[in-house]
Amino acid sequence: MKERIFIAKAKEEVNMQEFIRKHFSTAKVGDIEIQKTPIMTRIVLHTTTPGLIIGSGGEKIREITDILRLHFKIDNPQIDVQKIDDANLDAVIMAKSLASQIESGVNYKRLGNFYLEKIMRSGAVGCEIVMSGKLSGERSRRDRFVAGYVKKSGELAKQHVRTGFAVANPKLGNIGVTVQIMVDYPQSIANSVRKIAEAAVPMQEATTVKVDAVQEMKEE
Image 1 (tube, helix red, strand yellow):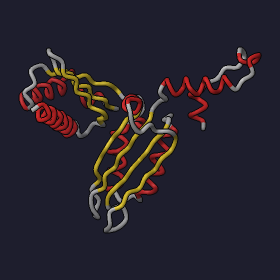
Image 2 (cartoon, rainbow, N blue to C red):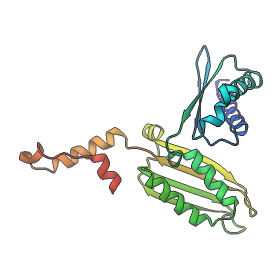
Image 3 (cartoon, rainbow, N blue to C red):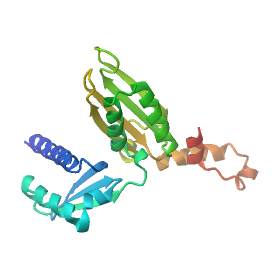
Image 4 (cartoon, rainbow, N blue to C red):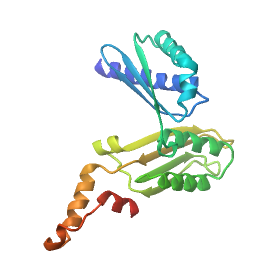
């Protein structure tokens, strides 16, 4: 019984996210967070174009609030719009942009390398782009583009890795695009590297040497 309730709530959240994205199709919407509390449902929209979502005098916000209240039976929806400073570090926007370029006919390998380089130049610690589907023929295949360091599992991955997914629809058939971006290092890893670096320095010099572990790992 509990599993059914959990699945039903997850489906509702996914449907709500898809509905909001379609409603604001002209805006670049990244992550959509849905936070439910006993007194309200807080919906956080991350976007590079907050003006297109808020509208003149908050008109569009009021409109989508009323729609969510009626369509999804939410008693007190509160929408919070957060501006994305760098779209190149938002995995959802990058995945959708990459899928759009694939549909326009650009070679997928060129796109994968281009987007990988663009994301890393924006300051990402690591990035992984995976494309799967009919990339270059009738047979489905999978290709992967990786740079830097990306944590793959565990609590650290949940905290520091952003994931985006989109589907391209070129003539040959659907192609799934998954983008994972690690935006910073977990503090535990940075501390470990710092300790290792400091241990390698003679004791008499330890007080004069400053080690920036995070910067060193990024440069590597």
